[in-house]
Length: 87
Image (cartoon, rainbow, N blue to C red):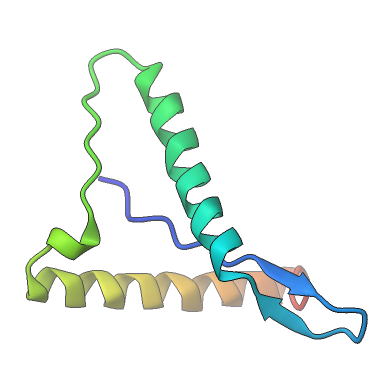
């Protein structure tokens, strides 16, 4: 199972302000899912189905939100400790 993609795309203004571009972020999420699906389709014996988080039971949605929050915290920690963040 692959967790739903969460992608944030930001524009950097001339004044150095980061502003998330919601439409770009949604398109980037779709692009990531499409790329993963294409790679997995090349493998034999795999069946791919997309499960929308909106269709999950409330308890599972809460668990998914907690898992994504944990992933974000670990990801930021890795970026900080490797010197890759702030951008």
